[in-house]
Amino acid sequence: MKIETILKNHPIIAILRNVDDEILPYYVESILDGGIHAVEIAMNTSHAAEQIKLLREKFGNDLLVGAGTSITKKRIESAREAGACFFLTPSVTKEILEYYVNLNLPVLPGVFSPSDVHLCLKYKIHTMKLFPACELPLSYIQSLKGPFENTNYVAVGGVSIDNLPQIFQAGFIGAGIGSNLIPQSYIEDKNWRAAAEHVRQYKKTAENLKSEIFFKE
Image 1 (cartoon, rainbow, N blue to C red):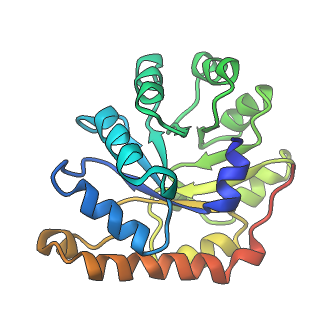
Image 2 (spheres, helix red, strand yellow):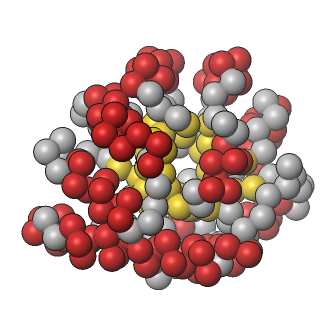
């Protein structure tokens, strides 16, 4: 499956990093109950591959599981063996992009500069993750789209329920949301019903702005 297809169906991706194994199923179930069906397990999380495998087995086709921070061949292969459906990186290198392209794996590479974008385009990758997106003015992607008109971007880094509408309105086609997705107090209290409701607000916001999400094939 192409990364563009994944993002059309799942413009919001939940980022899971260092979620304890014992609460992981409940945490993810609340994300599903909130209407988000794509998650990313960061590969620098302890037991990341085991968590990917567990989620794939437990939730099956109800959940699309990706592998984030997949910046080494070892991490990529570990995630592939665990059943990861797509991959994300926080940065780009020639070696790793070649590895993804040669294996025909759906990848959302992280870019920050015009040079990063240019490198991705050399490998015919047109959809990228701008990271850390919210450290920059939201108009930055329009500056990138000037010389790189056939590119699209997903916002990752600092995305919250407060700035999500502005992110889509600025032209981002999706967003990855980490610690802001579920308030820490809900996790500590194991209030998964409240967690699901909070996630649902992100889903509703994305649906309301869906007409503004576009792709250039």
